[in-house]
Image 1: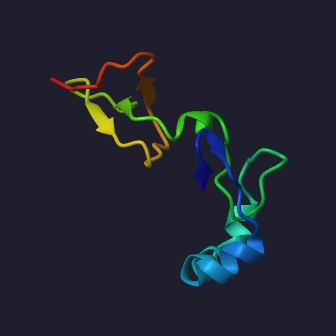
Image 2 (image 1 turned 135 degrees about the vertical axis):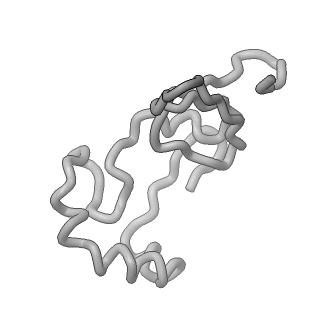
Length: 99
């Protein structure tokens, strides 16, 4: 979750109460999730890396990290998070467009 440009972490209790189906799925995989190499401040059910989350509320262009015959660029909406690739965000009032 986020408010403006700040990421708001939710606790395990909130996850369990507000999103019981997601919690049940994660809980059924808890042993595997705990084996991951994650930041020390991350709980077993959270995404393992926080880098880049500060730009989540921004519209962005994503360059795929898997390049085969051509470079693929996708426009990502402000409420979406990409887990792989290179992000490009705007620094001015111009729109981000892919041609």
